[in-house]
Image (cartoon, rainbow, N blue to C red; front, side):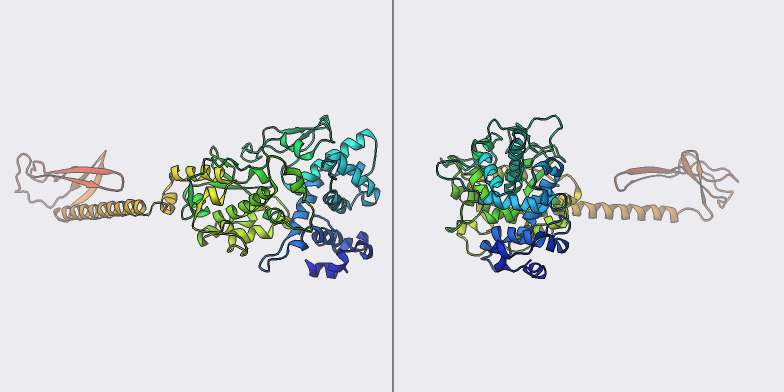
Amino acid sequence: MSRDLEEAGISIADLQHDNDLPSCEAVQQSSILQDVHICPRHLGLYSARFGIRYEGERRHSVDVGSQAAYLISELGRFNSLFSTICPPQYLPARMACWYIEAALGLDECQPTEEECFSWAVAANYLRARGVLIGDDANALELQHYFLFCLTGAMTCLYQPAKLEEAQPLQHYPIVSCCPITNHRFWCFFVSSLTVRGAGNSVCVLLNGLGEVLPLADREGNTVADTSSINTDYFNAEVMISALGIKVEWTDILGAHLDFDSLTNTLFVFRQPTLCYLNSFEFPDRKQTLLNRCTVDDTLEEWELRDLMWEIMLSTHMIFGQSPKSRRMFDEKAAFRDTSKARKDGLLRKLCSETWPFSNLDYHHQPRRIYRLKCDFPILGPKLAFLNQHILEQEPKTLTQLWKDNRNGAQWWEFWVVTMGMILFTTVQVVLVGCQVYHYWKSLPPGASWYRSGNAYEVVSHSIPTVARWSGYAHQRRVACAGPGWAWSYSISWYKLHANKPMSFRM
């Protein structure tokens, strides 16, 4: 990314000081993220604010460009609605840059000790900076809804749904169900947020949606107390190939590891970069937006950081811990409904490479067997539910049966017996075929076959006329077994008269 910024005439040092930056119009034609129409200047500002402080891992680069692209694509659905509160210099082609300016301003808005973080406080701050315009009642309502959408895009706590034309701005709809499987996300209890006062704390308002983030049981008595997970069978290769579980990628943070048993679908969060940006405590940095929106009496700051690491580690546990599981990850399928700029580079590292972090404590490192109480104190109940489903699920096709090696002894026993039966049946069919061939060779010379109704007759005119038979001289019955069916036939020699053909029926 830094090379692209240099081509646009921007250096990392310039990003720390906004005064000497070239104008947005001067670099608009050299847009880095062409499919979302954002200039290098604003992408550089976004990277300087959210990405540079976190580039401490040499093996890992923070792709905040994907976060910027998601922000712009989410808010871009409401361009016509938000154009009335957008400064005129950003209209109509530069609204993506305006969204970045608003995101930077919202991140800078830190409430004092006397006030709480609310959308009313943030709207006042952005109006003072010239990011928002309008101070009448309708404009203020729209500004509060804009900040609701901006908060959702920056934190991934929820995804704003499209407003109906006659819907009042006191009810903010969200995407509470998966549009593909119709699964209702476990983190939401309602489908819209009722805002009776934008001056209320954002944290309190979001609690009205439900349990937007999973919480740890502080009493230590969870269903996952004694549970453990063995990655030999708890992985993407077993889930997808052997059990037919479908993976649906989601942009909602709280929906990570939701499992819909009706459609056999597992939901996985596809923006781990957001988790990484919120997983460290920096003394020189103010609270992140996600921190301000979630940390309260029910969720401590250290619990939020642990949750971020649990999300990344669980994603790696499912897809990245074995070569077979890594082959199950399809980046194109993960971002099939988005632009190329939306591809999260950290997701590819977690799902198709080794664990990219090395300076973490023991509980944040991959291993073969995990204890849910210690390694996943927050996501443990979800993992325990999924693990129980995997243990109880049985393969439904021969292909799934072949790939289901969760129980090695049972797998070998089944296939040895099956192959033995197939071999025995094949040998039996071959032997019966040899018997039929032997009887066919023993027929008199010149015999011919023809069909008469539902029977076959062998006719021979080479029998001497002196041959005289009375009654049944010979009778044979041969039973033959084939693949899934059987047949039998009888051979009878009938009384022969002079110059009459000999025949037998099958």
